[in-house]
Image 1 (cartoon, helix red, strand yellow):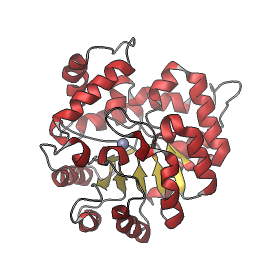
Image 2: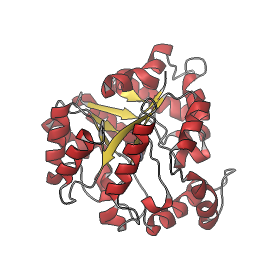
Image 3: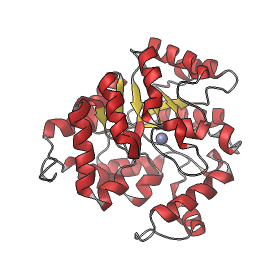
Length: 309
Ligand SMILES: [Zn+2]
Protein backbone atom coordinates (compact mmCIF):
# COMPACT_ATOMS: atom_id res chain seq x y z
CA UNK A 1 0.00 0.00 0.00
CA UNK A 2 1.22 3.50 -0.87
CA UNK A 3 -0.60 6.77 -0.18
CA UNK A 4 0.48 10.08 -1.69
CA UNK A 5 -0.59 12.86 0.69
CA UNK A 6 0.02 15.84 -1.62
CA UNK A 7 -1.15 16.30 -5.21
CA UNK A 8 -2.79 18.84 -7.46
CA UNK A 9 -4.74 18.16 -10.60
CA UNK A 10 -5.32 21.09 -12.89
CA UNK A 11 -5.97 22.44 -16.35
CA UNK A 12 -4.71 25.73 -17.69
CA UNK A 13 -7.84 27.58 -16.61
CA UNK A 14 -7.24 26.70 -12.94
CA UNK A 15 -4.62 29.46 -12.79
CA UNK A 16 -4.38 32.96 -14.25
CA UNK A 17 -1.82 33.56 -17.01
CA UNK A 18 0.45 35.42 -14.57
CA UNK A 19 0.98 32.10 -12.79
CA UNK A 20 2.07 30.16 -15.88
CA UNK A 21 4.45 32.94 -16.81
CA UNK A 22 6.19 33.11 -13.45
CA UNK A 23 6.17 29.37 -12.90
CA UNK A 24 7.83 28.65 -16.25
CA UNK A 25 10.37 31.42 -15.59
CA UNK A 26 11.21 29.90 -12.20
CA UNK A 27 11.58 26.38 -13.55
CA UNK A 28 13.69 27.41 -16.47
CA UNK A 29 16.28 28.63 -13.95
CA UNK A 30 15.72 25.90 -11.38
CA UNK A 31 16.32 23.04 -13.77
CA UNK A 32 18.84 24.77 -16.04
CA UNK A 33 21.42 22.26 -17.20
CA UNK A 34 19.17 19.24 -16.65
CA UNK A 35 17.75 17.13 -19.46
CA UNK A 36 14.45 19.05 -19.20
CA UNK A 37 15.94 22.53 -19.38
CA UNK A 38 14.60 25.10 -21.81
CA UNK A 39 13.39 28.66 -22.11
CA UNK A 40 10.31 29.65 -20.10
CA UNK A 41 8.29 29.57 -23.34
CA UNK A 42 9.49 26.06 -24.19
CA UNK A 43 8.66 24.83 -20.70
CA UNK A 44 5.24 26.45 -20.82
CA UNK A 45 4.32 25.09 -24.23
CA UNK A 46 5.92 21.70 -23.71
CA UNK A 47 6.08 20.27 -20.21
CA UNK A 48 3.40 22.45 -18.63
CA UNK A 49 0.94 21.71 -21.40
CA UNK A 50 1.42 18.03 -20.56
CA UNK A 51 0.41 18.65 -16.95
CA UNK A 52 -3.22 19.41 -17.81
CA UNK A 53 -5.31 16.48 -16.72
CA UNK A 54 -9.03 17.38 -16.96
CA UNK A 55 -10.33 14.03 -15.72
CA UNK A 56 -7.44 12.99 -13.52
CA UNK A 57 -6.76 10.01 -15.76
CA UNK A 58 -3.08 10.77 -16.45
CA UNK A 59 -2.46 10.95 -12.74
CA UNK A 60 -4.20 7.59 -12.21
CA UNK A 61 -2.11 5.98 -14.95
CA UNK A 62 1.10 7.23 -13.35
CA UNK A 63 -0.08 6.09 -9.93
CA UNK A 64 -0.69 2.61 -11.37
CA UNK A 65 2.78 2.58 -12.87
CA UNK A 66 4.31 3.61 -9.54
CA UNK A 67 2.17 1.33 -7.37
CA UNK A 68 0.50 4.26 -5.60
CA UNK A 69 -2.92 3.19 -4.33
CA UNK A 70 -4.37 6.52 -3.21
CA UNK A 71 -3.60 10.20 -3.60
CA UNK A 72 -4.89 13.37 -2.00
CA UNK A 73 -5.97 15.89 -4.64
CA UNK A 74 -6.57 19.57 -4.05
CA UNK A 75 -6.80 23.00 -5.66
CA UNK A 76 -4.87 26.18 -4.82
CA UNK A 77 -6.56 29.55 -4.38
CA UNK A 78 -4.20 32.28 -5.58
CA UNK A 79 -6.89 34.85 -6.37
CA UNK A 80 -5.70 37.53 -3.92
CA UNK A 81 -2.08 37.53 -5.11
CA UNK A 82 -2.24 36.45 -8.74
CA UNK A 83 -5.71 37.52 -9.79
CA UNK A 84 -8.79 35.61 -10.79
CA UNK A 85 -8.30 32.33 -12.66
CA UNK A 86 -10.57 31.71 -15.67
CA UNK A 87 -12.24 28.89 -13.71
CA UNK A 88 -13.55 29.92 -10.30
CA UNK A 89 -12.11 28.26 -7.20
CA UNK A 90 -15.56 26.92 -6.42
CA UNK A 91 -15.78 25.20 -9.82
CA UNK A 92 -12.26 23.82 -9.40
CA UNK A 93 -13.21 22.32 -6.06
CA UNK A 94 -16.38 20.85 -7.54
CA UNK A 95 -14.45 19.24 -10.38
CA UNK A 96 -11.88 17.69 -8.05
CA UNK A 97 -14.61 16.44 -5.73
CA UNK A 98 -16.29 14.88 -8.75
CA UNK A 99 -13.03 13.16 -9.71
CA UNK A 100 -12.73 11.74 -6.21
CA UNK A 101 -16.35 10.55 -6.40
CA UNK A 102 -15.64 8.84 -9.72
CA UNK A 103 -12.56 7.09 -8.28
CA UNK A 104 -13.40 6.66 -4.60
CA UNK A 105 -10.71 4.05 -4.01
CA UNK A 106 -7.98 6.20 -5.52
CA UNK A 107 -8.57 9.91 -4.89
CA UNK A 108 -9.04 11.70 -1.58
CA UNK A 109 -10.37 15.23 -2.00
CA UNK A 110 -9.14 18.12 0.16
CA UNK A 111 -11.04 21.37 -0.39
CA UNK A 112 -9.21 24.67 -0.71
CA UNK A 113 -10.19 28.31 -0.60
CA UNK A 114 -8.60 31.56 0.57
CA UNK A 115 -9.96 31.91 4.13
CA UNK A 116 -10.67 35.60 3.44
CA UNK A 117 -13.04 34.78 0.59
CA UNK A 118 -16.62 35.64 1.45
CA UNK A 119 -18.42 32.68 2.97
CA UNK A 120 -15.25 30.57 3.22
CA UNK A 121 -16.47 28.69 6.31
CA UNK A 122 -19.81 27.88 4.65
CA UNK A 123 -17.84 26.74 1.64
CA UNK A 124 -15.74 24.37 3.75
CA UNK A 125 -18.85 23.02 5.48
CA UNK A 126 -20.50 22.38 2.13
CA UNK A 127 -17.32 20.80 0.72
CA UNK A 128 -17.18 18.42 3.67
CA UNK A 129 -20.87 17.60 3.95
CA UNK A 130 -21.88 17.55 0.29
CA UNK A 131 -18.71 16.94 -1.67
CA UNK A 132 -16.91 14.57 0.66
CA UNK A 133 -13.82 16.68 1.42
CA UNK A 134 -11.52 14.92 3.87
CA UNK A 135 -9.17 17.79 4.59
CA UNK A 136 -8.33 21.38 3.73
CA UNK A 137 -5.40 22.88 1.84
CA UNK A 138 -3.99 26.31 2.69
CA UNK A 139 -1.31 27.94 0.58
CA UNK A 140 -0.06 30.97 2.53
CA UNK A 141 2.15 32.36 -0.27
CA UNK A 142 -0.40 31.94 -3.02
CA UNK A 143 -3.16 33.46 -0.89
CA UNK A 144 -0.82 36.08 0.57
CA UNK A 145 -1.63 35.54 4.24
CA UNK A 146 -0.04 34.07 7.33
CA UNK A 147 -1.45 30.73 8.46
CA UNK A 148 -2.42 32.39 11.75
CA UNK A 149 -4.59 35.00 10.01
CA UNK A 150 -7.84 35.43 11.94
CA UNK A 151 -9.92 34.55 8.89
CA UNK A 152 -8.51 31.02 8.97
CA UNK A 153 -9.41 30.38 12.62
CA UNK A 154 -13.09 29.43 12.15
CA UNK A 155 -11.99 26.96 9.47
CA UNK A 156 -9.37 25.39 11.79
CA UNK A 157 -12.00 25.24 14.52
CA UNK A 158 -14.35 23.35 12.24
CA UNK A 159 -11.66 20.99 10.93
CA UNK A 160 -10.53 20.22 14.46
CA UNK A 161 -14.11 19.41 15.51
CA UNK A 162 -14.49 17.15 12.47
CA UNK A 163 -11.11 15.47 13.00
CA UNK A 164 -9.92 16.50 9.53
CA UNK A 165 -6.34 17.60 8.74
CA UNK A 166 -5.11 20.81 7.13
CA UNK A 167 -2.30 20.66 4.57
CA UNK A 168 -0.25 23.88 4.62
CA UNK A 169 2.51 24.80 2.20
CA UNK A 170 5.75 25.58 4.04
CA UNK A 171 9.04 26.77 2.62
CA UNK A 172 10.15 29.33 0.08
CA UNK A 173 8.34 30.00 -3.14
CA UNK A 174 9.53 32.13 -6.01
CA UNK A 175 9.16 35.80 -6.83
CA UNK A 176 6.71 37.55 -6.47
CA UNK A 177 5.23 35.12 -3.91
CA UNK A 178 6.28 36.46 -0.54
CA UNK A 179 8.33 33.86 1.39
CA UNK A 180 7.55 35.37 4.79
CA UNK A 181 4.11 33.75 4.89
CA UNK A 182 5.30 30.15 4.75
CA UNK A 183 8.13 29.86 7.23
CA UNK A 184 7.47 26.85 9.50
CA UNK A 185 7.50 28.97 12.67
CA UNK A 186 4.45 30.85 11.39
CA UNK A 187 2.50 27.66 12.10
CA UNK A 188 3.41 27.62 15.76
CA UNK A 189 0.52 29.71 17.00
CA UNK A 190 -2.00 27.64 15.03
CA UNK A 191 -0.53 24.41 16.39
CA UNK A 192 -0.77 25.76 19.92
CA UNK A 193 -4.30 27.13 19.57
CA UNK A 194 -5.62 23.95 17.93
CA UNK A 195 -3.82 21.12 19.70
CA UNK A 196 -6.16 18.48 18.27
CA UNK A 197 -5.87 19.70 14.67
CA UNK A 198 -3.41 17.73 12.55
CA UNK A 199 -1.36 20.15 10.48
CA UNK A 200 0.54 18.64 7.57
CA UNK A 201 3.39 21.09 6.95
CA UNK A 202 4.27 20.41 3.32
CA UNK A 203 7.73 19.87 1.84
CA UNK A 204 9.66 19.54 5.14
CA UNK A 205 9.74 23.35 5.01
CA UNK A 206 12.06 23.07 1.94
CA UNK A 207 15.24 25.01 2.86
CA UNK A 208 13.76 25.76 6.31
CA UNK A 209 13.77 22.11 7.39
CA UNK A 210 15.83 22.90 10.52
CA UNK A 211 13.18 25.40 11.63
CA UNK A 212 10.51 22.83 10.87
CA UNK A 213 12.22 20.34 13.20
CA UNK A 214 12.27 22.94 15.97
CA UNK A 215 8.57 23.66 15.61
CA UNK A 216 7.70 19.96 15.38
CA UNK A 217 9.62 19.16 18.55
CA UNK A 218 7.34 21.47 20.52
CA UNK A 219 4.09 20.70 18.72
CA UNK A 220 3.05 17.05 18.44
CA UNK A 221 0.16 17.91 16.09
CA UNK A 222 2.56 18.87 13.28
CA UNK A 223 3.36 16.23 10.68
CA UNK A 224 5.14 16.83 7.39
CA UNK A 225 5.46 15.56 3.83
CA UNK A 226 8.63 15.44 1.78
CA UNK A 227 7.13 16.23 -1.61
CA UNK A 228 9.12 18.70 -3.74
CA UNK A 229 12.39 17.11 -2.56
CA UNK A 230 12.67 15.13 -5.80
CA UNK A 231 15.15 17.55 -7.37
CA UNK A 232 17.35 17.45 -4.29
CA UNK A 233 17.16 13.65 -4.07
CA UNK A 234 18.07 13.39 -7.74
CA UNK A 235 20.93 15.88 -7.66
CA UNK A 236 22.30 15.16 -4.20
CA UNK A 237 21.05 11.85 -2.85
CA UNK A 238 23.31 11.95 0.22
CA UNK A 239 22.02 15.33 1.28
CA UNK A 240 18.39 14.29 0.80
CA UNK A 241 18.99 11.20 2.96
CA UNK A 242 20.62 13.26 5.64
CA UNK A 243 17.78 15.86 5.75
CA UNK A 244 15.18 13.10 5.93
CA UNK A 245 17.15 11.32 8.65
CA UNK A 246 17.47 14.55 10.66
CA UNK A 247 13.69 15.03 10.49
CA UNK A 248 12.98 11.45 11.55
CA UNK A 249 15.49 11.68 14.39
CA UNK A 250 14.09 15.07 15.34
CA UNK A 251 10.43 14.15 15.73
CA UNK A 252 9.78 10.57 14.60
CA UNK A 253 9.12 8.54 11.45
CA UNK A 254 5.44 8.40 12.42
CA UNK A 255 5.16 12.11 11.51
CA UNK A 256 6.80 12.11 8.07
CA UNK A 257 4.69 11.36 4.99
CA UNK A 258 5.30 10.51 1.36
CA UNK A 259 4.07 12.98 -1.26
CA UNK A 260 4.70 13.80 -4.93
CA UNK A 261 3.24 17.32 -5.27
CA UNK A 262 2.23 16.44 -8.81
CA UNK A 263 1.78 17.39 -11.49
CA UNK A 264 4.72 19.72 -11.89
CA UNK A 265 7.33 17.78 -9.94
CA UNK A 266 6.16 14.56 -11.51
CA UNK A 267 6.85 15.91 -15.00
CA UNK A 268 10.56 16.05 -14.24
CA UNK A 269 10.74 13.06 -11.92
CA UNK A 270 8.11 10.38 -12.43
CA UNK A 271 6.01 9.07 -9.61
CA UNK A 272 7.56 5.64 -10.17
CA UNK A 273 11.10 7.01 -9.88
CA UNK A 274 10.19 8.76 -6.61
CA UNK A 275 8.43 5.73 -5.10
CA UNK A 276 11.34 3.45 -6.05
CA UNK A 277 13.86 5.83 -4.51
CA UNK A 278 11.95 5.87 -1.21
CA UNK A 279 11.30 2.12 -1.24
CA UNK A 280 15.00 1.47 -1.77
CA UNK A 281 16.08 3.62 1.19
CA UNK A 282 16.62 0.66 3.56
CA UNK A 283 18.88 -1.04 1.03
CA UNK A 284 20.58 2.03 -0.31
CA UNK A 285 20.62 4.94 2.11
CA UNK A 286 24.07 6.28 2.93
CA UNK A 287 26.64 5.45 5.53
CA UNK A 288 25.54 8.36 7.69
CA UNK A 289 21.82 8.15 7.00
CA UNK A 290 20.24 4.71 6.88
CA UNK A 291 16.57 3.76 7.12
CA UNK A 292 14.63 0.74 8.33
CA UNK A 293 11.83 -0.95 6.34
CA UNK A 294 9.46 -0.02 9.21
CA UNK A 295 10.29 3.67 8.81
CA UNK A 296 9.69 3.50 5.09
CA UNK A 297 6.32 1.74 5.56
CA UNK A 298 5.31 4.42 8.04
CA UNK A 299 6.16 7.17 5.54
CA UNK A 300 4.69 5.45 2.49
CA UNK A 301 1.28 4.66 3.93
CA UNK A 302 0.85 3.94 7.63
CA UNK A 303 1.00 7.56 8.79
CA UNK A 304 -1.34 8.70 6.02
CA UNK A 305 -3.81 5.92 6.86
CA UNK A 306 -3.87 7.07 10.47
CA UNK A 307 -4.29 10.76 9.65
CA UNK A 308 -6.97 10.19 7.03
CA UNK A 309 -9.00 7.68 9.05
ZN1 LIG B 1 0.66 21.79 -2.79
